[in-house]
Every structure is written in structure tokens, then in C-alpha cells.
Image 1 (cartoon, rainbow, N blue to C red):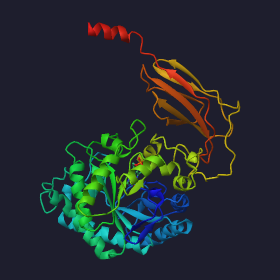
Image 2: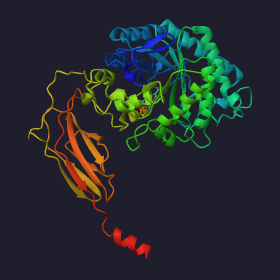
Image 3: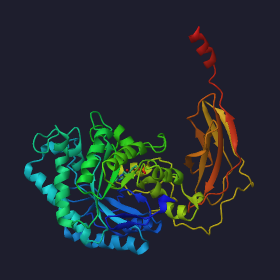
Image 4: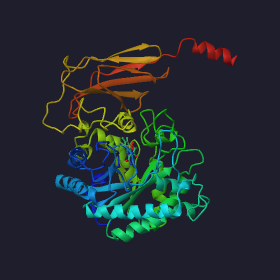
Length: 484
Ligand SMILES: Cc1cc2nc3c(=O)[nH]c(=O)nc-3n(C[C@H](O)[C@H](O)[C@H](O)COP(=O)(O)O)c2cc1C
């Protein structure tokens, strides 16, 4: 499998092409120091053999911001060194920190904008990026990633909504790219050319008047020309369309662009893969082979492999899927795909992040702070009645499923095939019932359910049930009347 082939990124050899993009854990205190819980979180990804582990966004400056890691002065280096050593001690995974500068946001609704920054403040931000990148090297990380995505400072310079009028002017693409160029030059000056520097930026801003992939491919080209070692793509996550909440600072993932950033369960799989493909194919055609990380609801190993084989991505990024099951790469390598815990994109992790609470996964056993250990020797869950007597009833435009409880399991994956399509997991539930509210009259639905235990190991499928969903009462008469 191409997915499991190594990849050399400026001397940082990934053991495979699987990456966990940065995901804030809220496991650090407000002091921003690395602690044991943080180390456990990242060691867990290494044990699961994730090729590239990007450590959650960490501040390069002293601005207050709830529980968030920091790399803003040398006192943070020993903690980061322990983290990097823990990852390196667990497997061949490579680990890079994502370094971030953000502007001030107040509970009153006020927020600082890049247009407010003086020339001196901009120079200080550039210097802070350089110093933080140098600390990352000093701490023993394998590289560093510049956070130039979402609602944060570097991204705001790249934005089509940048309205500065100086050398960083939003009037031209070159003006919008100026800050990136300055930061990149400073980072290189301080870390040298033999230290991998990646960047994360938006393939699409997903806001009114925001840029789309047409400009993103040009931005990527400039990044490649400037010598970035990998490009990690994201989408949306902006302040411009964030929903205000009384007494809370604006959170940039609450509007439509937030949905696009962390697409929920109502989005189809791979909603952004075409954007990464466009960007990769464009920069490749211009002679740059900088690896591109594609991200966004990728969880099926077959889909991941196909994106690589079809030249649509160089690395597969999975955030929520690897949070749910950090052993995904190991299970794929061992051909134990059946044991993968499937992310259901319920976004409980996103809500925890938004509320400054420790980020964990809804699918983990209750109270767990880390993903449960993989245990292939554990006996498979079995149906007490031998076959899993799944039943389905139709009521109020929904299909209600029920099945016998399996002792000792933590949940059930509900599989559905719509009108003869391939069956896929539509939901994971903790109780032994499920109501499907997204069914359309006139189509056939086939269901089965699989129980899974704390290590993610799934038992055999229940009996399958098929439901021919009737058209709503009176619809045929209504349509005939409209036709006449
Ligand atoms: C809880 C949580 C925290 C996140 N924190 C970051 C972050 O620190 N930096 C970042 O660039 N993206 C962050 N993201 C976005 C993810 O890296 C990723 O782009 C997004 O979840 C879509 O990928 P997925 O569909 O594989 O989950 C976060 C996402 C979640 C769910």
C-alpha cells in the first residue's frame, strides 16, 4: 500500500503517509507547559504508528488564552523536549509542533484585527515566529509547522478580507503574501535549511468574499517557491461568520466556515479532497513536489489509499478519526481494519474545545482521558441470542431500529446501505436503539449493527433488516393535483 510507504521530507523520514493534523487538547493548564497528560496523548499516536504527528497549536507569544500550550520563551523547551522524546521512544513516528500567533479577543465581542497592527508590532510577530521555530529545533522536534490557517494572524494576512494598505496590503495577492514571506525568511534564518518547515493554510476561506481554491493554488505555489517542506490544507474556521454567544469570546468555528473546517456527520466523506488535489496538481505542474496533506472526513483506508494512488494527495491527514482510534495505522498495517473504531463525526471533541474543556472522544469508554489500548487478544463481542435480532419499525417519517444488548460492550456501529449502495457506518450509539431520521420515501434501506468493545474490536454483524420506505401519505395525490 502506498499509504504505508515511507516519505522523506527534507530529511525527516515519515514511516508512512498518515498524519494527525494539529488538534488542541485543552489538556495543558493556562500556564501552557507540557504536562504528563499531553505527553500521553501524543505518545498514544506514536504507539499507533501515525507517520507524522503535529502537536496542537502552541502560542509563540504571551497573550492570554485559556488552556493552550506555549513555546513563547525558553522555559517551555524542557517540556517540549520530554514530549518529543516520548514520541521518539514509542515508534518511528515524527513529531512537529504547530506554532501559532493569534490576536486578542474579548468577551465583550471586541476583537483585535490585523488592520490594527503597527509596523513595530508586525516586526515583533515575525521575530516571535523565528524564535519559536528555533525553540522547536532546540527541543528535539523533527520540524515545525507554521499555523497560517483559520482565524489566526498569518491567515488573516493571506485573506481576501485583509484591508491593510501598506506593504502587507490586502489589495493584491502579493501584498497578502508579504507577511508569509517575511515570516518564512526569518524562520529559515534561525532554523537553517536542514530543518523541515511545514505550513498549514486554507484551501478555501469559506466565508463571504473569502478566497477559493483558485487563489489557494497560487498561494501554495509561492509557499513552494519560498521553500516550505510540506503544505497541510484546511478549510474555513473564520471569525467573520462566527456566531456570537453572550459573555463568551467569539469562537471561529461556530459559523458556516466552522462547519466546513470540521465537517459534521451530515457532510459526505472527503468533502475537501478535490481542493487538495487541485492544489497539488497545480504546484506539481509548476515543478514543485512539496508534499500536500489532504484533510477532511477521511477515515476509510480504501479512500485514503485511492487519494494517494490517484495523485490527489501525498499524505493523508485525519484529525478526528485518529483521535477516535490512534491505532488506525497499526491496524491497517496488520490488516486488522475490522478493528478500527470509526469516527462518527459527532463533533463532541469540537464542542469540548470550544468550551475550553479537555478534549476527548465520545467513543472512548466513559471517563477515559486517552484512547483505550489496542488489545487484539481480547475475545470478540458476541450476540447473546447468537445472531443479533435487529428489528425495524417505521414511524413518523423515521426508521426505528432496536436490537438485543450485548454485555460488556461500549457501543454499537449502525450500518446502512441506501438503495443498494455500499453499507457504511451512519452512527455509533451507546444504547441498543437508533432512529434514522434521514430516510426518503420510495427508497430501500438495509441495516445491520455491530457491537464494539473498549478497544474498538467489533463483533459480528447482527441480522440484516431491509425497509422499503413508503412515500408519505397523501403525497401521490398532492403531486397528481399539482400536475393537473
Ligand atoms: C478538537 C479539535 C481541535 C483542533 N485544533 C486545531 C489546531 O490546533 N490547529 C489546526 O490547524 N487545526 C485544528 N483542528 C482542525 C483539524 O486539524 C482538522 O483540520 C479538522 O478536524 C478536519 O479534519 P478531520 O475531518 O480529519 O477531523 C482541530 C479540530 C478539532 C476537532
